[in-house]
Each structure stands twice: as structure tokens, then as C-alpha cells.
Length: 254
Image (cartoon, rainbow, N blue to C red; front, side):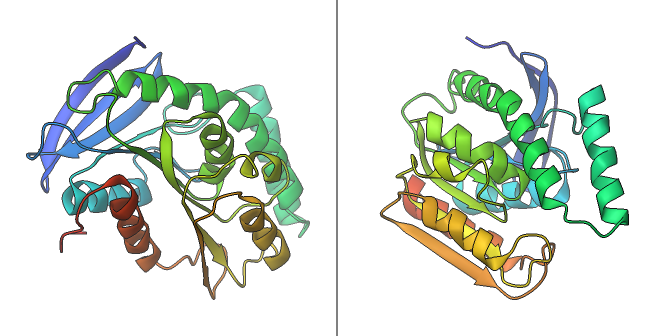
């Protein structure tokens, strides 16, 4: 069993929120305040520069927990949130800011850095899943999904490609470099988000990553707008997607 330790617990809005560490990596688990003894689990990955408690994470968790009765968990990515930055992290972030200030493309730097983070984070997500499935309220029999956009996709694609316990996933908004080969190994149902006017990721790049997935059931959701303008209603669509594939009815709370 992996070393899962809970450090704090609170309840609000129909959810029990528990902070934890697994092998020293900090995370948070959202669970229904009441309901079935066993329920599906959705693992999430946060975006670059964000953290496990970012409003996007807690908002998605609220939809999945109160709307579907699921458990939801996320951990801080390496160099993010409550985890210290290494000299490598600092150098890559400085290079990103330099390129941004100079009006140079950010993609090559982000792709390279995210690939490095994924190498570290994928084993951590495997350890997280191992540990959570030891909990009696989750167990090993229930279905598991993954939801990650941007850097969450950079980490999630290689994780899902290597992890047969994941049965449905939501990805989006990333370059195909470093990910297309892993995407070709994924055959589970996926939903994929793409911004048509993304100033960083070209339409061709976004479509190439979507096309690479070998899934027989895959849905492309394209919206007008820039990189950070992904409509909030796509979160509701993702909740319905997980309800279909993991089991559960979406209530009005979602």
C-alpha cells in the first residue's frame, strides 16, 4: 500500500474535503457527504502555473461530487502548489517569461517543460490511484476517469496510456509534440476541448493531437475564443461525459 496520510478534513456544500499526502506528494480528495458506500473516482490534473486547490479544480470537483456522487482527487504537479521548485523549474519558467516578453512562441518551451514534468508526475499518479483504491469508500472494483486540460493533458495522456484502470478521459488544449505517440495507445472514450482562436496552439496542432487518439469513441469540442477562454459550459459537458461512462445520473446540482 502506498503511504496515504490525511492531514485535514472539512465539509461544505454537500462535500467532504480531505487534504492528504501520498508518498510526500500533497493532494486533496473531495467525496460525497452522504450516498453509496462505493462510488466512481475521477482523477484530475491541474493546468500549468496552477495548483490542486485552484478554483477550476474545486469547481469541477463540486460538479462531479454533488452532481454525480463521485469521488475526485488531484495532486500538485512537480514544482507547483505546495511543492518546491527545483533549479530546473526556475530555469524553464524564466525562459518562458523571456520568450513571452520578446513576443516569441511559447510552445517549444512549454512542450519541453511539460514533458519533463510528466516524466515525474506519471508515477505519482499511479501511486495516487493505488493508494485511493485501498480506501473502503473507493475500492478496486469501481470505474476511474481522468480529467486534465493544458498541462493536465501533458501529464494525463502518458498516464492514461500506461494505466489500464482508467476507463474514460477528458483532455484538451495542448500541442501534439511528445503526446501523439502516447495518444495512439489510448482506446478508451475521450472528450477533447480545443479553442479555435488559441494564440498559442494552432488549429492544426490541436486537431493533430485529437486525431492521434485511437479511441473508437472520441468527441471534439471546438469553441471560438483564445487559450484562456474555454467556456465554462464545457465543464458541464465533461460531467455528463463521465456520468455516461463511469455510471451515475447528473442532478441539477452539476
